[in-house]
Length: 310
Image 1 (cartoon, one colour):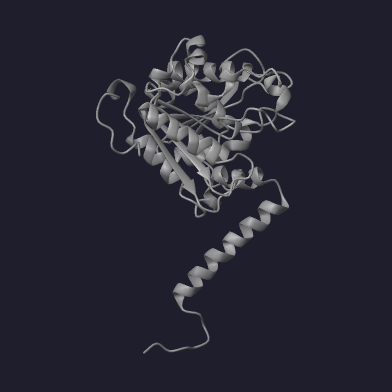
Image 2 (cartoon, rainbow, N blue to C red):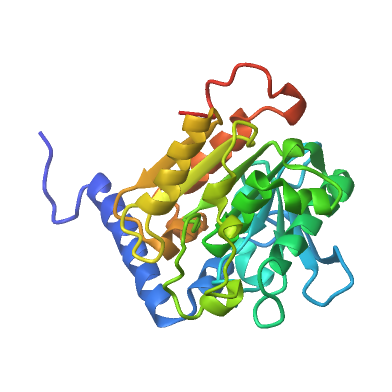
């Protein structure tokens, strides 16, 4: 028979400790820059980092690489951050590079030109250059040029979708969507005409925004395997109109597209859940890394696929 001495049982202490740490993280997120906090939780030497690599001649055409310490022909994820195509910096997403490297993936975190320096489609051209550079050079950093994925959050998810679905951009950089092993969109806007957000309108020359600027208009059976991640509580990018609808359209066309929706997860927390302090909140990193592991190289894409698709 257990005795009660005034001390909490060990299991209860563990639960209380985890809850206290989680509360502390949320308080800190509210009190300071969330990205600074998440990056501060990355251990030193957690990955083999190579910062400030040029993929083009312009100041914003730079990328950082995060590789597992023992990387040797590891899969590669090229990640584009969000910010309404108006803001963002690759250094703020060290936590995302760390997350991917911790799962045996070489991560490429790239800057691209932003409004007002750039409008649609300039940032897509920059992003296509990043992919082409990665395919040409990533072997020197432990990555497999034959297993390159594109990924992104929010505006970056839009970029990833356009590179994977609309062949104009990668072809312009000397490559093609068919060379990608897959693509991952985290709460990306894929069908947002007419544009409601006033700060986004000038980025896409509204009201003269071309219809073919929307990923939903480039669905085909030839699309690389896709993973669409979204939060059910996202009030910034409608998860049903965007992620769910695009996944259905891709599957109807005969493409591989898996949709994962996380209950109670909002727009920013979806990408934040990649970071070490917030991974308890949702298995975003688990689902992303499982998709990467399950997707075959493009030259094997004719083999049956049972793990990467619904």
